[in-house]
Amino acid sequence: MRQHLIFLIKLVVSVGLLALVLSRHSLSEVTAALVSPRWGWLVAAVLVYLLSVIGGAMQWSWLLRASGLRTAPGEIRRLYFIGLFFNNFLPANIGGDAYKIVDLGRQEGCPGRVFCVTLLDRLLGLSALTVVAVLAWLVCIALDVALPSLVWILAAVLVGLLVVLAILVSRRLGQLAPRLLVRLRLPTVAAQVGNMVAEFAVFRRRWPWLGRVFVFSMGVQTLRIVVHLLVAHGLRLDPSTGQALQLLVLIPLLALLLTLPVTVNGIGLREKGAEGFVAANAGLPVPGTVAMEMVAFLVMVLVSLTGGVLWWRRRGLAGGAAATTRSS
Image (cartoon, rainbow, N blue to C red; front, side, top):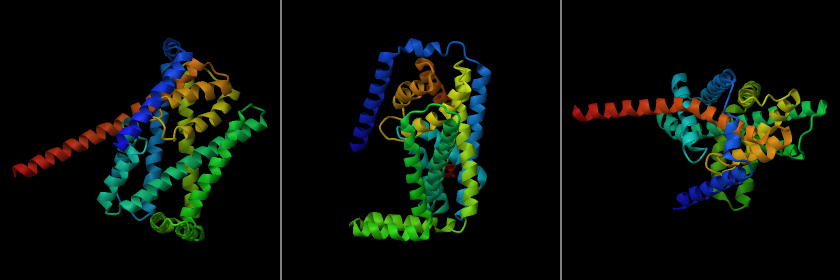
């Protein structure tokens, strides 16, 4: 009942935000931006996002192997694509991670380690996205490109992410955190954090290697921001150089906002953010900006369908194997 109630609340919030956006800008205004797209730009957006997903799978694979797991790279890529599919088609954006952790954890017999590596992968990705946005922010300052004061949130988010990473990977901070939680009378949480810190110990002597993985992650996140710029050109918004720089900051801010578990897969919050935040600060037409975010999301959904095919194929193979076993 609790899960159903949470889903219902998220659904109401999503519908309410969509209704708010459409009350100010009709659906016909938004769809007008889709009438004559430049298909070459949109195809390029799909290919760039696909490249970023392959890069994300490689990053997860490197972290898993560094932790001592020896799952075949092909299996890891398959699980990554299936996880992406579930992230887009389940009413919670952690559904895909849960699938990867359970499936691979069962195969390797160490779900705790898979959870920790997947958490590290997420933290590196969010940190890399934030750093890319901060670098673009600095370029905007140098070129006197206007940005809202809200961008200071990026600094706070980056500090918070780095603190969490330091607690998990640093030996000294990792020892202090469980002790503090025990003093706060949270022994169960302290034990869980202690177990996580122990799993992260394998990365403590690999800081230079983690640094290279982080730089690679910045490249992956940059590609995902570029998808939005390609879609903008595909919808004939044609942002100027200054507007493109603004989008390099605003799109990551919107992405961080979408991590809040208040809507169903960001639906409604994405469109409201495009209307009241991205368009307002980048000087782009609101209907076109809302359409841009909707199409960028559809690009991600389209690529994630590959994971759906892989999941269905595996399910079919498992069902065939079970039927063969029963008949024999």
